[in-house]
Length: 104
Image 1 (cartoon, rainbow, N blue to C red):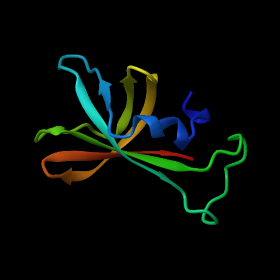
Image 2: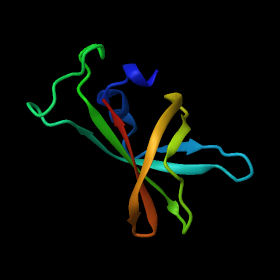
Image 3: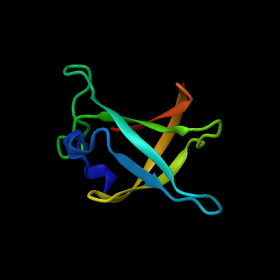
């Protein structure tokens, strides 16, 4: 349940692979490369989030000239299971697209 996740839920999986499976193509692996919480004092926990501090995740895709469009994708991780997460492409980095997911 993405609305109940906290940044600390992802910390053990930093630098690990999350897989996206799309119809008509092979799986796409994204590497979780950054976890950032909102700066303290900048944004308090949103009402109804159980005290969750907003945070973002950044992923790097595979080396490829193609990239995923802004969309909700099912990311699979062998320990976390499957999560539906809205990803936004930020731009290429060394031939790999950087993606961001924001949790308010």
